[in-house]
Image (cartoon, rainbow, N blue to C red; front, side, top):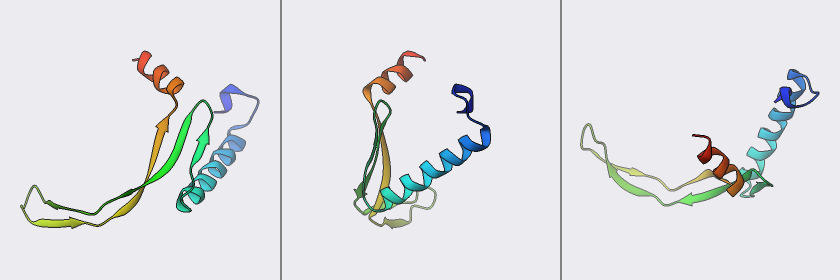
Length: 84
């Protein structure tokens, strides 16, 4: 992060830590975060479901939960796809 601009490694670390903290708090409140040209962070509610442990065959129930998701913008997705 610090190689692209005139910023120290420590300052870059503080900026990243602040971004992660505020993004985590916003997602916990159910908000979404959009970074133009990069992508969008958002939450999705997953339904509970029944399943089996593949090793023991024992029936289990996975409870409903809210999970974080990221959807890259088209420009980012294409750049990653084309650089393989």
